[in-house]
Length: 435
Image 1 (cartoon, rainbow, N blue to C red):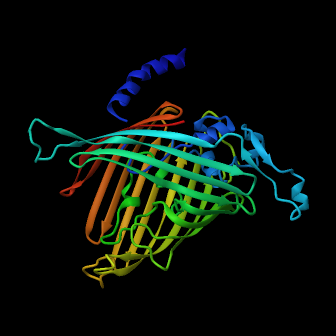
Image 2: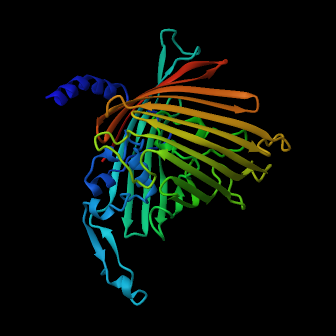
């Protein structure tokens, strides 16, 4: 009765969010119910509020999308089609190594709708018009996530996006968000090799799995160099968990993003360690009712070396070698989680008009999430970027509410630096669902 009463009390709030909203989807972040069906478990096993992961969800992701701690066989509830006999392993190479296939197609569907409200400018046609509506629309997506045997997993995601922009009309486009395979030649913990189109593991956390608007730290470019940190890139990455489940690493070689393809490829490396809480390999205590709660500190450091080809090759062109270095700290204590990151970028030649000028930029990001109830998570974020002497800042507040375990509503207010002060620039809302 108490839970029903609580839901009835929430209903007006949920209805209001459904009518008003439904986040600016500048970046896609989906939950994948394929895994919920595979293990017959709730989305909250791996997610605080999707896409934000619990410690167990992080271990699941690092474990090549399998239940960590050696519990894969006991935890999996779906049926598989055996491709050969187990005894064939003993007579290999005189027999084909056996494998398995999911009995049902491992696919999930997602949807999202969005509404953006921006304060009217001084050029508004009517002084009485205080608000303007823009970027109405939404998106739908299909994700396929599959594993076979102990050695490999695959992930593919396609998104169709429709947006009604004020003044520019409606646009519809389809794109492949991710398309990669994961090979685990030793085990799913110590060594995983990702090949294809994926999100590079440059930071210790994913910008695509945070609650709130798309952060500047991942999308801001420097002058004529169009590279942005943590987009989806083509390449190969080696990652894993070592040190009794307390240390992690990632090394990758990828195509640069945003600019023309160059012959020297970009490469990066990251090292991290976690103190307290659930181990990175999924071993440790976690309460079933509150899987997001723990007391831990996660620290990561990275370096990314890139080569960007700038300009139109028929007119003018130059190469801008650049180096990004930085790190992040994730503090979790009970219901609170604080994520902070800092990045320094040194560009050798980022300005076409001034080919001999280098440029140093700094980026800072900090976000606090707090679980008030399992279905209600407010967040606050502050971001700052300095390119040369030019400083940009952004502050945002987000309220994420799970209307159901697989349906999330968000309401976001964003302030940006204008004339030296932070001013409210937009109110965003969204409804996201996954099936």
